[in-house]
Length: 290
Image 1 (cartoon, rainbow, N blue to C red):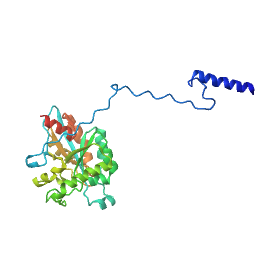
Image 2 (cartoon, one colour; image 1 turned 120 degrees about the vertical axis):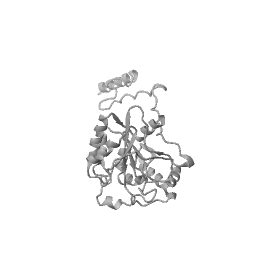
Image 3 (cartoon, rainbow, N blue to C red; image 1 turned 45 degrees about the vertical axis):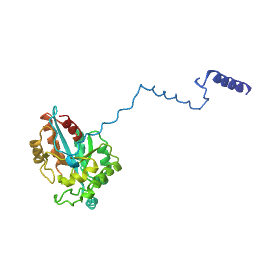
């Protein structure tokens, strides 16, 4: 026993003299500490990534009217912006609860598989109904989310039978949609707005001015709303696209059931013609440079 104690004391003394790095100094069964993490790099050897550039917008029109963007110029190479309206009106909750699908995850999956950048014009009500999808779209660098109003009510009447908003409520409706995107956790949100049904007048452009958005329309109508023939939709798009075009399509299965099939034809045929697919923000930036 005395010999064991004497040996243990000698071991302790050696550990003290040689330092804790000596093998076995922790004693039997005592875990050894992991080495400390390397010190942070000296200032100047690593830098934070630069902040993302703000999305381009257009200057207000005379009289303070909200600017309207319809088509890009013809920058180097052929570019086209495919845009998808994710429509859901404020009063369609009972229909969604009954099983009607206002989303189209298959379409989004196809765009990802084909490597297509696109802009989704989303209503706030859609984002509330499908928050997981809104977050996934809004956090995918291939996509950007733009504003299609909260309620999908008309900003000018008549407009395809949509309920109409008063001018005093228009800017608040747009802000409410942006709030819904933030609540869903979407990050790639741009300050662009598309009028429900494409209906607007100067009164609506004036009423929207406080929201600070650029209105985005289109020059190519796909005709996918309520269509049943995917080839007819594809042919209408292929016939209409020009360099800098903005194409309007939909991301709503119940109202546009053949869009995903049409995209499977549209994308390879446009690529064969030399087109590149861009988001509206890139198209608008190119237009400002021309």
